[in-house]
Image (tube, rainbow, N blue to C red; front, side, top):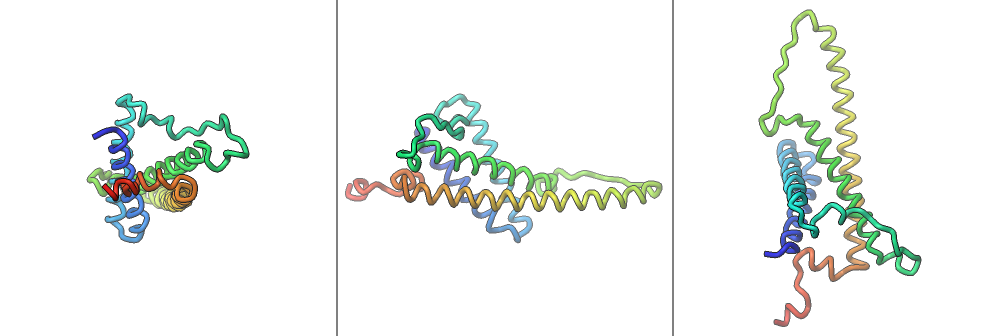
Length: 181
């Protein structure tokens, strides 16, 4: 199997897991486990990058605006890369905030905390502070998840309008010549 086939499989796995994680936001542990699955796919992708294969490097996400003109503004590679960078950043932020909210509980990494009576007042203040932090994390998590959906929507619409053959290829749709064969 060649590199592009692995990229397509990676893309499909990440897309399906991210969509399911987004749609399962109210399903508690299912949502959490889907989030950890997304994190695993991201980690595997980063390990793949470290293999040195130039076809999967992170520079593929960095937009270069060289050669961008009004005449090619809609089809220039920088457009796709801006959307991919937006997807990558918002996906990483969504995943990181989700893991921070869970604190590893779903995968068995729990913290044991012992508070004595002498620290009860301080503990109440700490609990209020912790609740504010958790609310902030939850708000950030939801913001980045919605930003992710926005960038994915732009990415999909752009590909369908301007790069339909690439879109079909990435979702394993056969070419017309493949259908006749």
